Structure formats: C-alpha cells, structure tokens
Length: 235
Image (tube, rainbow, N blue to C red; front, side, top):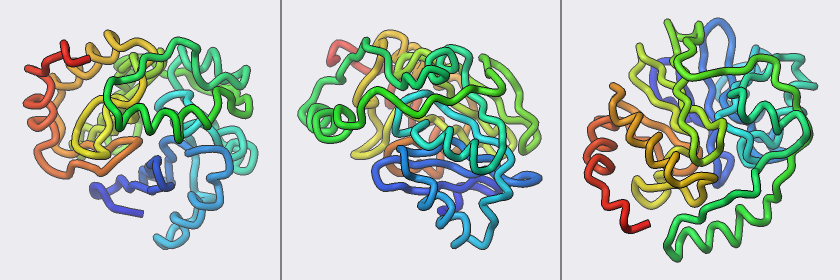
C-alpha cells in the first residue's frame, strides 16, 4: 500500500486504484473488478495490517472496475456497503453502467475504451447498499469525511474530502494517467464538467484517482489552474 497521508493509503490493482482509510479499523474505498479480493487482501497484509479489520466499504460509483468485488467482500466480511442513492438504485440489480455513455475525444481515450472499458461489461454481482449517501453528508472518519456528489461520470458518483488530512478521493471525476485530465467516459459530460468545477471550490492539498498517479502537493491549486479556464470547446 502506498501511503497518501497519515491515515489514507492507495492500493494499485493494475489499471484501477482502491483506497484504505485507517481509523478505528479499516474502511475500504472501492473494490476493483470482479476477482480483486486476493490482491486487496494481499496488499493490506503486506502493509502489516489485517484485511479482516475492514469494517465498511464505500463505493465512489457503480462501474464494474470500482464495484466489481463489492458483493463478494460484503459476503466474506459481513460489513456494510455505502454508496450514493442514485447508483444504489442500479447496483441492487447488478447493473453497473447506464447505457448513456459519452466518450471523451482523443485516440488515447478511444483505445482505453476499446481495450479495457468495453470489455469489462455493464454488470456486476448484485449488491444491496446498506447506507445511501448524499451530497454534504459527513462521515465519522478522520474527524469528518465530506461526501461530495460529483455526477457526470456516473449519476451517483461521489468524491470524498478528508478535510483534516486535506485529501480529495476523486474516484473517476478526473484521471491522472498521462497528466491530469478528463476521465475516458461520462454518462453526462455537462454534469461531469460541472462537478469538476464544483471541486475547484474545495480546499485540499492531495488528490487521488481511480486511474492514475496521486497528486501529493498543491492538488487543489493544480486542479483550479487546469480547469477554471479549460477550453471546453475541445470536447
């Protein structure tokens, strides 16, 4: 596990990242694709921690690379799963992706979509969400983690702001695979842009992503500079 801040860690599962918060046990943020449990448990054990200390799972959104192992982990650990109410509606039926998809322009995005996203399918093992999250909810972790509803990539996409540790867990709001930029797909591009602008008003020093490398200093400033004057005519 890569330490992001005092109590937040990143686990790379290849092309997708999940995160662990340590505070009176462990909280897992996202679960990777189906079959990721072994890799997640192995990374936690290698860091000298016990994966059975996971007390809850929070999903940033329903897509299969983020929620693919949610039901398996819930079943194994007997822990609650939390997600935004909009994506909770479809995950209970095993639906991970809505049919409305906007592909962000560019050859790189097209290749990622064709080689990875398209092959992942649109379904997951059905998972019932135990606690539905909404915008501005404050979770009792690390002195308060703020739920930020950031729709666009998915209708129920959330980002999580660990205010005391100044870390924004951005999910797929943005990516940082080859530099900070838009995610490969959005269900609603206009909503996605509005959500990006929404987080530019927040205070955070570090930012982590479902895809790509973390930004470990001045992340809020970097995001504002990149997107406040972004030429959206390019998309």
